[in-house]
Length: 121
Image (cartoon, rainbow, N blue to C red; front, side, top):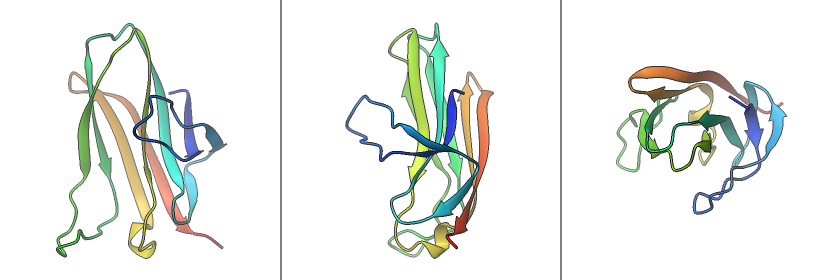
């Protein structure tokens, strides 16, 4: 893990990793704030990472509680940077609380970080 905390806005269509703005696990929540961590994967070309983002209980458009976010990332190069994070969206109040981010390789945890999103004072 090379960094964790608050980042610049991430462009999901770009290969560029967002820039770290503040190392922290306590996030003063506001709309559009980006948080998470960056991993540097060495000699992993051709492998796949899986990830899970557990979050406070909030609902989707149909009123159902959203399950944890999960996914995969294929490692394209031997020195590969991977960003795992999220951005806060409306309504802010149901995003407050504990967010747990975990990355796995072959079923083993390779990175884990817990963030607390708090209402900004």
